[in-house]
Amino acid sequence: MKKSPLQRVRAEYQPKLPKALQGAVKLEVGAPTESVADQEEIKKLFPNTYGLPIVEFKQAENAEGVTEPFNVGVILSGGQAPGGHNVVSGLFDGLKNLNKDCRLYGFLMGPGGFVDHQYMEITEDFLKDYRNTGGFDIIGSGRTKLETPEQFDKGLKILKELNIKALVIIGGDDSNTNACVLAEYYKANGAGVQVIGVPKTIDGDLKNKWIETSFGFDTACKVYSEVIGNIQRDCNSAKKYYHFIKLMGRSASHIALECALECQPNFCFISEEVQAKNMTLDQIVGQLCDMIVERANKGWNFGTVLVPEGLIEFIPSMKLLIAQLNDILAEHAGDLDGLTDAEKLQAIAGYLQPSEAELYLSLPEHIALQLSLDRDSHGNVQVSLIDTEMLLAEMVSKRLAKLAEEGKYNGKFAPQRHFFGYEGRCADPTNFDADYCYALGYNASMLINSGVTGYMSSVRNLTDKPENWIAGGIPITMMMNMEKRHGHMKPVIQKALVDLDGKPYLKFASMRDELKLNTLYQYPGPIQYFGPAEVCDRPSMTLLLEHDKEI
Image 1 (tube, rainbow, N blue to C red):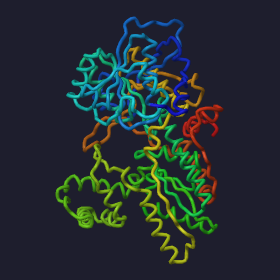
Image 2: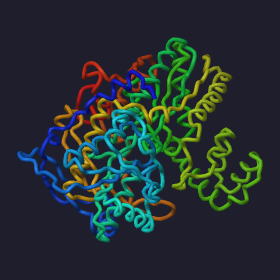
Image 3: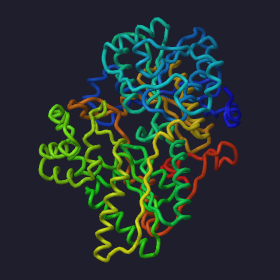
Image 4: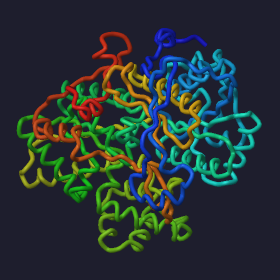
């Protein structure tokens, strides 16, 4: 197949590595660690992989060659994120630099391929077409959960057949939680197989002091910001539309916040703030209407509003409603089958508590029905299917009409609605993500060679030049706490929400009033791969602010 000009040039890009990973390396071992919470429970569940030390790689004077080659397996797990192919490339190159006869096997379509023994060997001839490209199409991804001993044992069978020494799982918080469980199981049973995780999610909620950002966040936010900038340019040109733009991020608002810092829209909701202030849906609509009325008084009947995907679950009253709906749909699913939409709404309202029933019936019918759809594999409402941007636009329109009748609003309100999600998940990685992902993969090969298991590949100091990045690993148990899933307490990696005392949020909050009542849009433009470093290699504004850098 013929490649585009960019594909051909981009294939030649050589990602940069930290100095610590260039040439011979030595491992420095730090102090023992503990989990972020629920230490006693986590320790009991992970007796063989709990309390391990943080490790860091340093340059060594002499290379210690690997005389015996070994084989490694790799899995792409969960949703796609830009840079996954470069993690595989870095892992492959790291293994070959240790010993040219090391082999890398990719399990097809995610953890399911591991359990069902579907795999392929990744060779240089095959890999060359995927370097510095987006997507997970090199071996495919999937959402099968590795949770049961039966799955672990089936996977172990193919690992032994292929003489695989270590398994690298590239995924988000749930996938890396599963990697931790798998590492503990193999360690407890003397399987002789290491498990290493790599932090992936565009949502940005897998991070801490040692994992400064998950890969793909930088690229996805820059893709969304380009399109938001385009919309804002159109908005400022036509001067007659309000654009409600929903962005991915069901559990945290990192994407919305980063895009707000990049683009300076008139309004951006931060779900964590809504929850902290115990705001109601009515108050949220009121905030928007206040802004629209004030802008109309200036003669401006246009603007942009960013909405995090998970906003609806962070509104305390909506959260209570959704929790009740989860129970009702599980208990009364049979009773609701075959009902018309109107009958279903009334039947569900009858099962709800009075205050939640009132809220439920106040919603536009199509939104109420969307809240009543089948739940996902976690038992959660499928928030990506809920048109939150449409809900807000409709409720604002209704409120403004009432204000107009009362003589309190004399503007024109014409809403446009957008949802940016899949558009950013498989973009060609930015230079930052291309370098970061390659380093994460290469670093994983060094962790394997060091003999550790139950670790996540960690590359930090990311606002400095790549050669000054710090490479090493942290125990996955260090990131875990206990949470209720499907009615049971389970160990999971703690999600990182937007810190309302953190510099990225405070920076946005300091701009908010000025952005509402003025038109100060910024236009980031497309991702640049070639040109000045300050344009092409700049990390996210979130990272820069968190590390006291200028933006």
